[in-house]
Length: 94
Image (tube, rainbow, N blue to C red):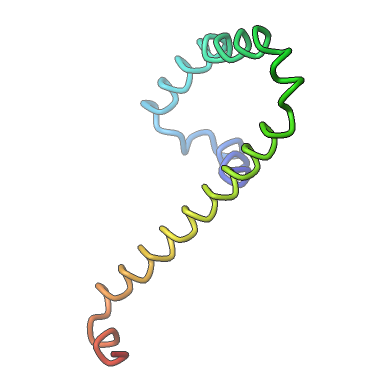
């Protein structure tokens, strides 16, 4: 994401106009996306203070599981696409 951001900053002409228009609309209304989350945090700050450890464990655990699931899916799809691209090599391995 950082690399993509740097490339697009250096070459703004690479951004299609339809994407730029959509991004402008989202950025103009970005505050609306954070209001519900902020209200939820403020309304439940006492509970968050009491349960900070399980919340942190759940956040770290779910992040790790998401990364693992993504890596396994990418690995599976890569091997499947390679087998489809080279059917002779796949049959020779069996």
